Image (cartoon, rainbow over all chains, first blue to last red; front, side, top):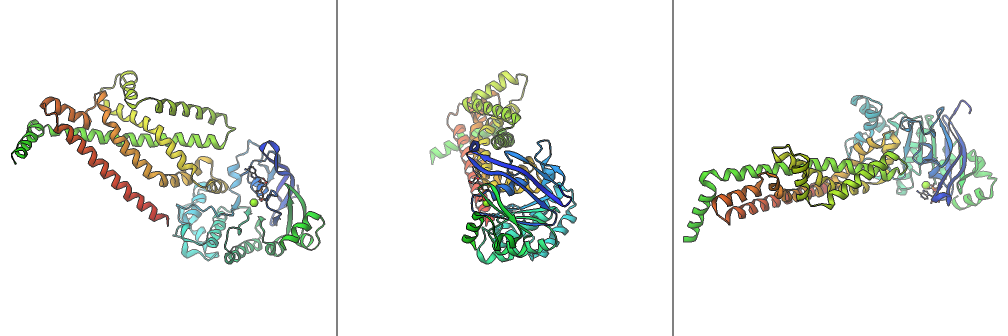
Length: 247
Length: 234
Ligand SMILES: Nc1ncnc2c1ncn2[C@@H]1O[C@H](COP(=O)(O)OP(=O)(O)O)[C@@H](O)[C@H]1O
Ligand SMILES: [Mg+2]
């Protein structure tokens, strides 16, 4: 494992229904610090399962995951500690509807990092400022648009100072006119050097922002390379077929 | 008008003479104490049972949770499978034989009984919350229990508050059997006045009226609460 590697998966498998469904069928990948990796592939190819395995929201059937030098798939490991360092953004935002935006953002730093209320709120306000939502701090999630919710979800995860950010189709549930504002925040984050793993159908984002693109199909990584390699010169027929449909 | 004056005199004789209305007021207090105490105990027990059942459902591999789940199922089966009056008799005459005041025994018994019914309400309230909420909590680094406590339960309770209100109404009426274990609750107080005054009608009708008014009041309050909650959702 090279020094820059922050996540390394080794032969990850995730089976359902006693092996009848192989959502992941031997996935080995490395993600380096500061790298933006975009995962593409047809629906049902295992992209979400792969991403959700990285912070053990899905427990792999076999295989191992190293994160920051620790084997988090070891059952003795307290995964809660490691999850603090892996922010996750979901397709459906999953903001806490009974808490204000500010509370959504401060509850975890206060309870888990033992940050003081003042510090946690100052940090949250600073982040809200950056995504242009400081004036919504004291409203509830139900009062926000989809794009605003997703921007809050991103900064909520950032409040924990994560080392990696995982995104599972962050713009798929949005009205088309709101996709741009969320991608802009993600792009800014990438430019600041955040390590990101992004599952998305936004090929424009992948071309522009990704350092590396992984194409998955039927639970395996079919092909991986720079955006130029994958989009302009794909080697595998399945990659070509997929790209011919989405581009 | 003649009968009306007679009736007023009768009421005076039954309730005012010897300050017998005080028995009713004390009985009414007991009924309220037992009802609210039992409700609180029931909600606490119900929450614990519901959490155990949900955790056991979510992590089928955990041995400890499986054992706890079986124990909870035994509790639910036994409590729901026997009449509350019988449970009251068992509590008072078999388990807490040394208890002089039946009030605490009654409160505890009704609470344990109520918990078995509230548990199912709370469990379905928890299951109705989007699984994404648990995932979001866990992804931030909260443990299972922290996420349940900070994120899931507050939302679940908001949804089931009206059902808890209905449980309170049910308890208010159910506690009328507390007289079986030497508790002078509202019903028993009415019965005592009936026996001392030989007025077979008014004490019992008055007791019925008090229950009715209380139930109507609670129902109105729950309706108010429901409308409030619905408004805050927008
Ligand atoms: N909980 C589950 N039970 C059974 N099958 C599942 C479950 N979750 C995912 N799958 C299956 O695993 C495969 C990969 O799913 P997923 O990772 O969500 O794909 P993607 O995100 O690429 O669309 C699909 O065939 C899906 O039906
Ligand atoms: Mg998916």
